[in-house]
Structures are given as structure tokens and as C-alpha cells.
Image 1 (tube, one colour):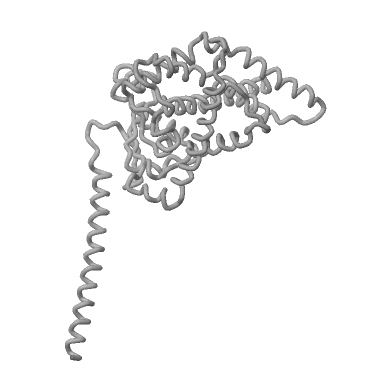
Image 2: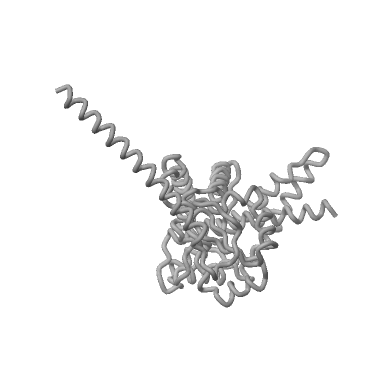
Length: 332
């Protein structure tokens, strides 16, 4: 019995050692395979590329100021170069000629947008105009935006709103004469008030849910501008679930959906009988839905997605635009 016991123990030790050696050998082979594919699998007709590391590619080289890094690389590698961000190949264009070739000559080949877990969860699974895949749905949403929401006549009809809110801001500054004025806060308030009136039909001040709305908009901005490992390493997507990032995005998406549902209900229940020039974006989209002007049904999800992305882009554009204007005034 003693000899049998020692024999079994020796056999288990030998098996364990063999398994450990096999695991190490397999991991080493896998590493060198990835290394070989990363370094030597570039086709001869591929654009020039900066040196990169296996697995992570050029991610570590972008630094805190990616635009400066890309500018330096374009001077060294030319106006068309290829990067690899994790497992995602990226084509970088740095000249007007190459950009014209892509945007006009080969526009269909480059018309689709890259996938993003943030856009998927926060913007109704790519139902908005900015991230929807190229196709009939995207063309119809673009038509709605260009012909009904952002045409010249419609934009000019909101001039009174812009002027009224600007006068209110100037009046606040005048009343604060002799004391400090936080222009950044005033610009944010001006932008939010203008866009809210144009898109949603009303302002959301501190007394009317404005604080919650401001917090939601801040969370949305932060999440849309975040770095998500799943976008560059799809097989590591489980890390977002473990870290709670997926849950956070789903919570913000649900809260924003509830807010937009309330906006739609208010517009449908109020049933405002207003002139065409005084309609806000929600009024127009609900009218398009009722009249079936697109030839196919536009559902509530599409309306909410379109309102959300237009509102978000308007806030960013107007906010930055006002900053540049006042910066120019102060420096000149």
C-alpha cells in the first residue's frame, strides 16, 4: 500500500509538471503568433504606419494630445497613414486631396460609422442620425433633419428666441455691475435655454427640473467622451460589466429616456395650436409622425433619438462658438 501511494503521488506530480510546462509552452507560442501577425502581416499596398506594439498597437503612443501626435506623424509618414488602436485598424487622412477622394469619390465605402458601446447604449442602439449605419433609415432621418428641422426658414424663425435669451443674459450682467460675473456659467445657461426652447419648447430652470436635467446632460457628456476598452478589444468587453460601467450607462440612458418620454407626453397632451414658425422640434416630429410624411412609420424611439443627438450637438456647438467669440473680443 505504501509503494502504491508513493507511485500515485509521483504520477500526480509528473502530470502536474507536464500540464504546467504545456501551459507555458502554449502561452509562449500564442505570444509569438500574435507578435508575428502584428509585425509581419502588413500588406505591401497598405499605407505607411508608425511602429506599434503587439496587441495594443499604437494606443500607447497617442498621449494626452492625440491631435498633436497625429500632426507630427503626418509630417513623417505622409497625408495617408494607418494606425492600429488595439484590434481596430484606423486610416488617418491629413490632406485636402485625400479627404476629397474619400468624401466624394469613395464616399459609400466610408459612409458607415464605427461601432461604440457608448453610442449603442446611450443613443438608442444607433437610432440617431450621427451613428446610424448608412441605409434607408439614415437617409430618411437626414431628410427630416435637413428639410424640416434645420432648413434656413426654420433656423431664421428661431431668431427671436436667440435674441430674447441674449438680452436676458446681458441684463443679468448689467445688474451685476460692480461685482464679479461668472461668464462661463452664464454662457452655459444661455446655450441650454436657447436649445431647450428651440428643441423642447420650454426652458428648464432650477425650479422646473432644470437641476436634474443639467446633471443628466453632464453625465451623458462624460460617458459619450469616455474611453471604453470594448471598442478596441472586443474580447475584453466583460471588464465593462464587471467594473459597473455598463450599468452606469444603462442607468443614465434610462433616466434620459424617462425625461424625453415626459417631454413627448407633455406635447401630446397639451396639443398646442401654434403657428408653423413657432413650433419646436418635438412639435414638428410629432406632426411628421401623425401625417406619415416619410412613407414609413417613425416611432417614438426614433423621435427621442433624433431629439437627443440634435440637442446634444447643438449644446456643444453653441457653447464652444460663444466661447470663441468672447475670447476673440477680449484678446483683441
